[in-house]
Every structure is written in C-alpha cells, then in structure tokens.
Image 1 (cartoon, rainbow, N blue to C red):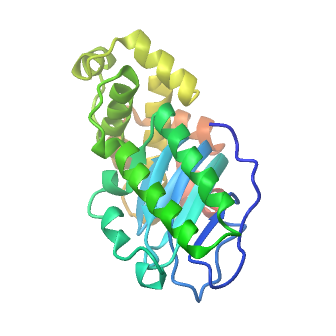
Image 2: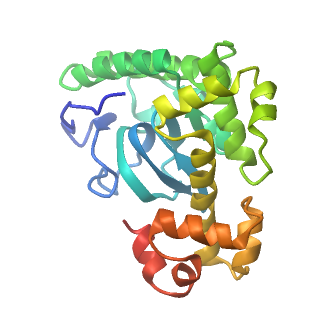
Image 3: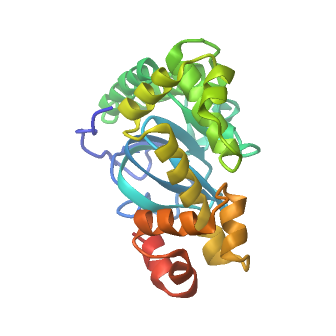
Length: 277
C-alpha cells in the first residue's frame, strides 16, 4: 500500500470517530476520552506490545485495541499506519452494540489480522469515504463506520476462506507468528500450505521485502527483546526458546539487526534506548 497522503481529522471533542495517519508517539486523543482503536499498518515493520505480549507487525496487518489495553510500539523501522479511534457505541446516535463486530483479546490472531491486496484496497476505499464524512452529519459518519466494520470482518484473514496463493501465504505467515521457535523446513512448510517454494519467496520478497528465512530470523530476534530485558533467563536459553540452536549465531544476527550484542543489550541502558526508538 502507498503511504497515506490525507490529513488528520479531529473536528471536535464530541466526535465519535477520529482518523489519523500520525505515529502513536506523536499523537493520540486526549486522555479523558474513552477511545478504542483500529490500526492498519501501511508501511514499515516493528514490534507491537499489547498488555505485555509482543507481536511483530508489517504492512497490511490490521489490529484492534480497546480503551483499557496498554500498548506501545517498539523498534519501529519506517513504520506508518492509519488509526481509527472510536468511542463506545452508547455515544453513537444510529448504531448501537457494534462492539460485537470487534474481536476481543483472547487470542492474538483475533486482534492481529492480515489483509490481502484486494481486501486492503477495499478497506482503503471505505476509509476514504469515512474520512470524507468527518465534516458531515453524524448519521452519515456512523453508517460509514459501520460499513467499515462489516468490510473489516469480511476481509480480515480469520474470516475469509478463499484459497488463492496470496491467502495461502497469509496463512503461512500467521503460522510462522505462532510457531517461529520451531525448526522450519521451508519445503515441508510450502507443501503444508499447498504452495511452491518459489511462489513463497516471490510473495514475501514483493510484499514484505524480505526472504522467508530473513523474515523468520527478524521475527525471532524481535521476540528476544522482551525476555532479554525483563527476565532472568540466560541468553543461551532465550536463544533456544526463540529457535536459535547456535548461541553464537544468535549473537551475530542480533548484533547485525540491532547494532550491539545481546549481552550488552541485556546488561546496560542501551536496551531501553533501543526499544524507545
């Protein structure tokens, strides 16, 4: 997806829906408002920490956060996103109880979802209409917000059973997010998801800009950050937990990715500095 070019909209404090393209550290609604949020990643990669659990994020990922959730972004690399903030349905005039369309955090794949290109275009069309309604009446805005929620439910990976190559790749990526710590045989994995290895390489390289192995390595490294900083586990154990059998290779990959060895990251303030970028 192209980087969003529209301006941010925050017309009044009474607004029930707000859309912004700014990064979270630069902007969020005033704290006295009870806003939940839908986020669409449009570019870059990073780590999304929600209620203490880390999830890797990348373009065309969609996720939901509630007003009560604690979440931050860490180690963001060229991250760009669209936020749709919304108040509870009792504040809306027309649509009530739409929360039933919003997934709750009882499983990561319910709050973090993947969109294929056609779905992402459909959602962007719905967003453009919602953006255009920001200065119009609340009834039109609410009806378009409901349309967006319905489109999101239809398009998001968890609900869609289409079996195209791209859908298979999305299922494979979802599997990697849940099983990154396991030994990966790319030929067996390609067979498991009914795709060939060349197709898998082509889609990942085109959509994410990484080879399958490079993406897996980055995924594993991102998942090493929190236990390095916030647990007492030995580095060798952490490396094994995330799928590295060779501690030296883990240290080499970590330094290449983050610019310092894991032991230094764990034992100094450099780790906190890195995660605050």
